[in-house]
Image (cartoon, rainbow, N blue to C red; front, side, top):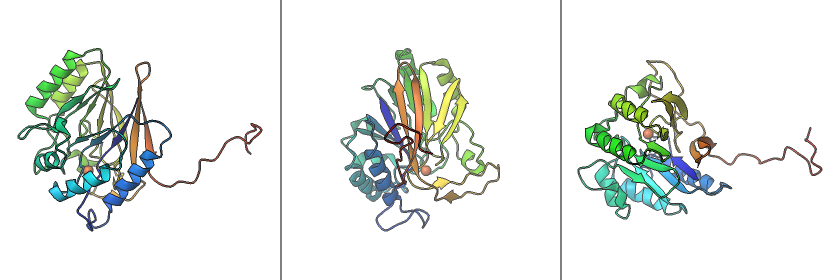
Length: 273
Ligand SMILES: [Fe+2]
């Protein structure tokens, strides 16, 4: 199966640019069109937070229109720019988003790879937190299917990225999260957004990763005092390919109308020099 991860779309109201520079709606349209052109079958899409930029009902209404063009089942998760109440109100048919006064956490059981989505949103803050209720729930869910390959998704990555200003907006209770993941070897991968860059590291005995944004990317500046800045580098998303025999293999797609594909071999099968 293939899970597409799209993240940090930061949809704004019509006519507004993110940080007065980024047309995030056009960027999402381009990313969705690119995804639809993939030659492989995409089974499910997971949007890992910062769905909209300011948590407004009007932004979620706009997001909903964008996603109506998607021909693949999809699931939504909040990030630090989101608002749970407005998200639920805009997607009442997405019943997995749950009820008022609770974080948005759920499992997706209908695919060979089990997916567990967590909610690290702290209203009004840039940092993330899972909280005791959700961490206990996660431990229970992992304990109930210990042999089922599982992917855990959370907007804030639980590991340091060494981009200083982003790490100061990190996941505040990652140590407890790490203890739980370390105890459950069926966890194939922990995936995140938030950093607007693709990053991989060993974490909790396995691999944790982040995906690029469909819109703007955080500047690659690995200093503790890196200034908070973004780049209009090519946007992207990730395809997480899973089989039971091979686990999760991740590819990063860069959105754009790139020249090609061009053949390596001519019609007689000779390598083109
Ligand atoms: Fe973001």
